[in-house]
Image (cartoon, protein in one colour):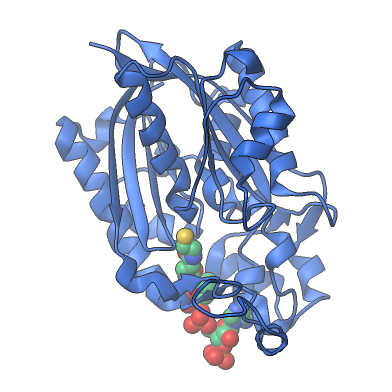
Length: 329
Ligand code: COA
């Protein structure tokens, strides 16, 4: 039986730090409010004009080096992002070119905060079926270019940060990716969304839309919070029961880094002790598709995540989309 496993991982965050105190100078907010409601202390932001593909490239190079795989040996690129360089074409093809990869397929996927778990599933399926040998999965975001750093946009501007992380998967006799479980519920598409530009109107964006700030993301925070808590818990129960595993069997949980309050609430609900989850949103905020692999990559660097351990990534995000996985590292 052919399985897939993660051969290597890497990340890249831009050097510029934007603290809660820096935000206080831009909008009516406070370090205390942000810490209490979200747990975030600072986030990284690019210098203006640095695109998502650049962060994706840096993270991909680090992951390839860690996996000891050369770019020319990659068979498929999957990029998860909600902040592509262009409306089209996607970041995947830009990355194919930057890496100097062969003329291989390059996908962009649009599952926001669940993007990495969806990407992992795609890579796993292509490898299991024997179609491809080496798949690069990247989560990369430049959120800062599209946020409203005024009091009007403060609910989202304080949460999101820029960053990228990548993994390289390859075939294995023993299961690395053991199972992946994915869900969506489009009914709530406009609870966390970016309305404009979009093909539901012609032209796709107007001067009036810009005045109204429709080109900035919008979130119904409390509704998202409520659904996130419920779906995170369901996704963990699903992956554990599917595999006949218990919380005690898992070495580390990797929650999508949305909000420390959500992570704490679910951990209490399910009985996950604090030492079994790795969080870094205090320093990076919510980096959407990059958040889970960014945690995993730092956990590897710090020696917290080691070969042979059993880990559970779990995500929820805009769409709504959510999912979980069980991985033997
Ligand atoms: N600084 C200061 N005040 C802020 C603020 C900010 N950055 N953002 C919002 N507020 C204000 C609101 O305007 C509101 O003021 P009002 O009571 O005068 O109307 C007040 O704070 C409370 O807002 P509310 O939205 O009820 O706060 P909350 O406790 O729900 O926390 C979030 C807001 C965004 C932190 C929270 O809803 C959340 O984390 N939601 C889920 C977000 C998430 O996980 N998103 C990603 C999913 S992948």
